[in-house]
Image (cartoon, rainbow, N blue to C red; front, side, top):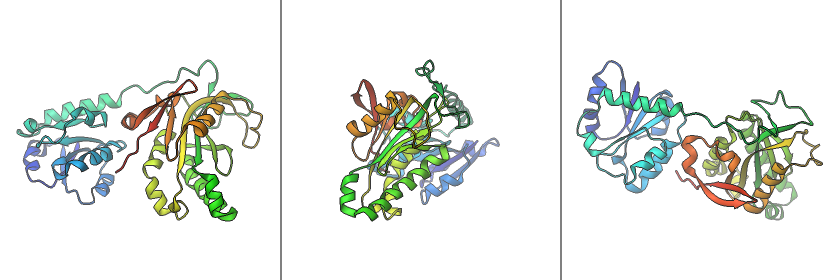
Length: 326
């Protein structure tokens, strides 16, 4: 196994000396300078250990959140100074190991690494959620669009997306600049949904619904929308239209509807479509991401900590993404 240790302190070399001396594993000691670039360069199977002694207490939680969002990478925490007051929260945020003061007194053994590896494998093999609630009413739309035909009832992933305060923007910018402004939002959103087969469906200049094929096993738009909200300030700074203050609100739902091509949906009757519009227009707040209870079960394990209850709306439990500042 590849083990990469982020630390600027020399005593970590002694702690990992037994592991480094073994012929089975490779150990790399990395500094914190440009650590994000180093993360991307390391293989996906790398196990990272982060030495939180290098950070002030108010920065430790931000660091943990950053590592908890890593895809296909696992991390443990070195805490010889007992800076963490809630160790359980580390594991809620995806950590696979915790090195306390007592553990740090003796070198890290290959046996411990086997135990950690066994835990990682057991967590990865957790059964994926399987949708049951819709099976009797509508067939699943599948992994892609190839089997979807017009006029039939399917279960889809649904994203409601709308620009905040769009009426005020129209007054402020004028018609020509406003159209360009909204086109920028469409293009940015398209760059997020197109790779996961999202199809703009019921759409106006201010927003609407994007549909996604759904196979009952996962809902990829949750992770993609989470990433878009996490990076929204960076997106704004890179796009001159967004940088003047554009924000937006999203709602993700899994529901059924008869499928018709875009432009031929005016006479459709669907409780799911009505519900997601109502949540988006009547319940959601600006600059926020919401999930219905149907979509909630498909939140990736490492992201569940970042969604909080928002109560009931039209007999449906709603969750909202917490603001995350990295």
